Length: 153
Image (cartoon, rainbow, N blue to C red):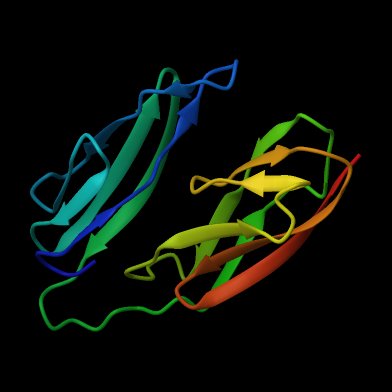
């Protein structure tokens, strides 16, 4: 991220009965970047901080580096993900994306399915198996993409 810029991280949590759960955010160094209750991160000063999204006992983190004005951004070279190859009808799983290099800046990760009738994917990477068949799940970040085939049995 660059100084005085903002971006929103779409964290979504679900309860065991698939209801949306409340997510709270925090920054390890608010002098570097702050995060609002809706997940909007605002760059305040050059440096590195860790943004945490927490729901109940579950927590995930995102390392954020704020660059000084005029600093060069680090581009995404590769995107991968941990995606299940097989699912059962009615099952839900979460994609774990990985962007390389880890210090890439201005990265927004998106997900899509070529067959939402078989497997749907939401903005947080939650996969839902709807019926038997196959779907190609695409993960995109920083102009790079990768595809995985998911088979529902």
